[in-house]
Each structure stands twice: as C-alpha cells, then as structure tokens.
Image (cartoon, rainbow, N blue to C red; front, side, top):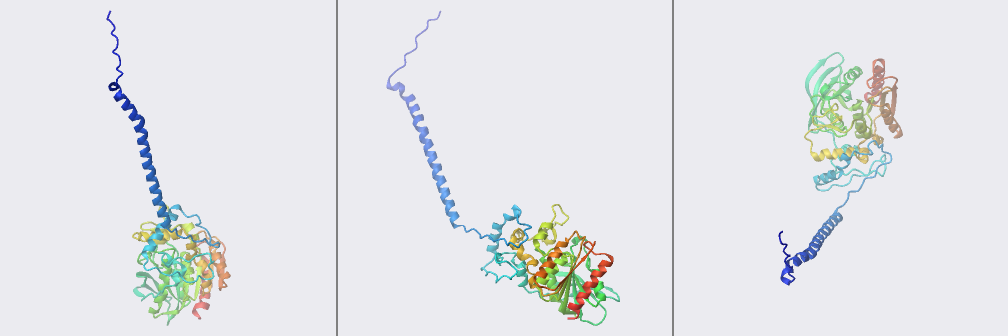
Length: 428
C-alpha cells in the first residue's frame, strides 16, 4: 500500500500572493472603468449629433401649404403616397431652374375663391394653367398643302400641315365650292389610340355636312396623332395649344375668313374646345358633342396620369392616352407633372370649369343619355357652370344615344349645330 504524502503547505508570504491579487484587483477596478469610459464616449457622440441636427432644423424653411378650395371637387383629395412624396423634390428642382426669381401672378379672376393661392410662375406646370395659357400668344404660321386628296362637287380635300410650338401638326382642310373667303369651323377629334388613328377620323362626316352648308372645315391631327410630330401634352393642353396656333395660321389660307371661326369638338375634342373658349376670344361659337369633363380632377380619377414613352392606355396598369409624354422627358418636368396631378389647388387652376366666366362665345352642348364613355353629368356640369356665369348656352339630350350618335339623331344633332353656326359665325 502506497504511503500518502502530505501536501506542501501554501506559502503565506507577499511574494506568493502578488499575481492573484493583481489579477482580481484589475478585474474589479478595470472593467467598470472601461465601461464608464465607453458610455461617456457614446453620450458625447449622441449629444454632438443632436446638436448638429438641431442646428440644421433651425436653418430649414418648410414650404407653405396651399389651402384646399372648398368648391373643388376632391376626386384626388387623397393623393397616392408616391406622388405626394415628390413635392419637396419638385419644389427644389423648380426653384433652382428659375433665375432670376419671377414675380407672383396678378389678381385671380372672380370665379376663383380667395383661399386658392395662385401657382408660382417658377413651377414648371404654371404655364399649363388657364391663367398661364391665357398669357401666351398663339401666332401659328403658314398652312402648307402637302397634297390634294379628293375633289368632289361638295368639297376639295387637302392634306396640310402647320407649325405649333416648334412642332409640325398635320390635318385635313376641306373647302366648299364657290368663292371665298368662307367661314371656318375647326373640328377637334375625340380620343382614338394613335396606332388606330387616321387623318380625318371622327370628324369626316361632320366636315362634309358643314361643307354642304358653306363652311370651310379644318380637322387638325394634334401632336402625337397622324403624322404630326410627337410632343408633350400636360393635362390635355397639347391639343389646346395646337388648336389655338391653328387659328393663328388661318390668315395664310386665302379661302378662309379668320374673323369668322367656330369650333366643334367630340369627347376629348370637346374638352379641348372647352379649354380653348376659356382662353381665346377669337372663337365666335362652340359646339360640345359628348364632351369630357371640364374638371381635370374627374379625368385623373377616371383615366389617371399621362402615358409615358412606350406606354399606351391599353398597357398594364393603364394611363391617360390623351396626355402623352415623351420617353425622354426631363425628370424634373415629369416630377412636376406628377406633383401637380396630386394637388387639388393646382388642378383647380388647370380646370376650365372654374374659368367659364371668361367665355365670350355662345355654346351649344349635345349628350346622349346612354353615354358610358363620357358620363352625361359631365356635360350637365358644363351647362350649369355656363348658366351660372350668365353665358349664352343651349343644351340638348338624346334619349338612348351613346357616345357617338346614330341615324336620325346624328342628323338632328348636326342640323342644330349648323343652324347655331349660321347665326353666330357665318352671319357675323
């Protein structure tokens, strides 16, 4: 059996206890000290960051909010978050794009509530409001005959073009037989997908009817249709600009009397006509045939914002084919368009229904009770606004007729329109 040896006694001198004591003391005092130093550093960093943010906030000037007019139809009162979030970026882009600063527009017309602030001229979309469009000239240019298409005993049809804002706009001119100059009716076509459109579509039958009544007719294709140049159109104003430049071009046609001009518009073309008569006093009389709403908020709710680039109204998600934007459109301009589309105060000043007190032309409105493309209440709203403004207006409904009248109802409509033009255009 192995002898058990006693363990060596633990030395109790200073030399034997030094390292355990140092180790335990370091841990006891060093760890809290390290934590305290780290916490202090974090606290100092947090204070510095907050001081910096506070200083930055004091230097930031928040943009003033525009009040919402009580009378505005709030079809887009809850803008999409992606659109509303663009406001700050658009404001910055538009401010840097304008130098030097420009003055605020003059007094608003009486039809606009005082609570609606005028849109800043610096905003890229300001020129497309009714005020902005009214402030600019529409000189047009020479109407050039490209070819003679048809000659009959009722009319001679010409394929023509003319300039509008640097674009070339094509169209159809039909001249009745006899000696001119003839009174002129401009025919504004409705929306047809551009890839299905041909010059004179939607207006050819009305043109022939009016030619028989002694009118020279002009049917512009508008930018982006037919062989017209492509160009941006914000809130339906591209065709409006093209039509008003057409009026400025009529003096270049010896057969046309530029002092006797009427306007006829179907659907989208009715909307073009409504904006045109709120802007230009050269139009002596206007016929609205199943017009789209004169309130741009209605159009955005129904069809959305404009098609961009290769989009079409038939593409996934849809877009408003009447508002076509170039694929290469400047980003700041596109953002400004989207911001304006989500701003009720801006839409108010884009919409002709709020400016019909400016109209000097007598107006005649026609709508079918079964129209599902442009709801009859849109035409009724235009009628009510014109009546409320004390304007000369006639209003006809056609029982059971849809967006395009048929048969005897169409002939009745055109007879009423021609008689109306006889009084207010031909015999003036």
